[in-house]
Length: 171
Image (cartoon, rainbow, N blue to C red):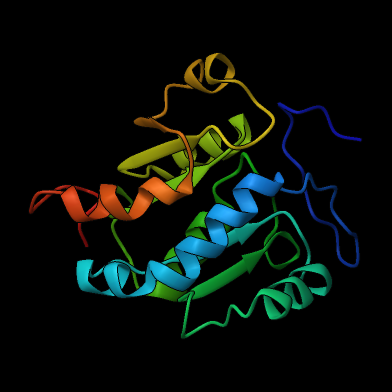
């Protein structure tokens, strides 16, 4: 198993290690996906899911919760689609390509691990949000200097809606 602060590199055909989200986070994500779509589209934001799961795991999970690209999500990037996993910026950069974003400073990255925060910084994201619904503590996440520290992803629509014109969280 890879140490938490070491990059995970996908080799062809290799399944990458993963840490599933906690039950509370999954429930918050489901609410965001079902109820947050209209707010997300009104704000002009695209939503891309980047995950350490490979496509063989991700596709059935998304199908089970009723998420589809073009509906709840604008893009999905799995670790097996890029050369390097977190904390490398590869998944974020691929998500940017898929959504037509060319300026990293206009990207908001949200995650619940220090590797997520490091990947956001490595990609040059304008806003790097750490959420407290994962296994890591506020102190552990804060040590990586996220732009924002939120209780969970359920707060993201409010963050997007409150973003002033010209803010990196605005598209």
